[in-house]
Image 1 (cartoon, rainbow, N blue to C red):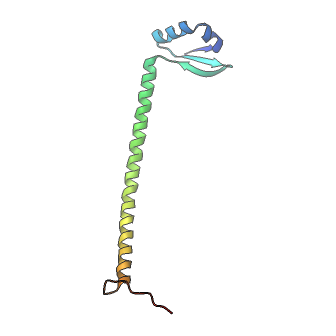
Image 2 (image 1 turned 90 degrees about the horizontal axis):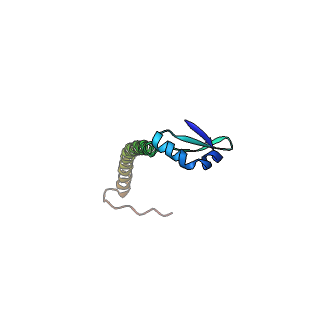
Image 3 (image 1 turned 60 degrees about the vertical axis):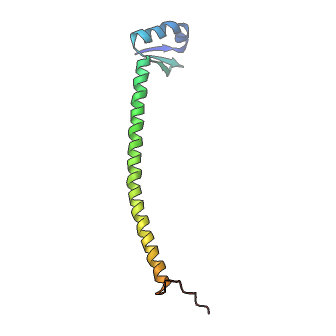
Length: 105
């Protein structure tokens, strides 16, 4: 992989773009001696974006499965709590089906 200083890249921009486009090799541009950016062939960028999109889709599916799995547990807990609450309300209502008035002191 070719590396160029920023000043060299600026001076030879058209040549660098042509080499990347026709040669297919990325060029890393250094700023202050450290890699800053890369010029890559468009085909490479398209493949990179497709791989990234695929990884995002897989992560989203995994998250949806986890939420669905947790949701089933939540639904069961909600149903159990509803039954418990219903039993408590029916028990407080007494045999007539009406809640009894609180007893005063």
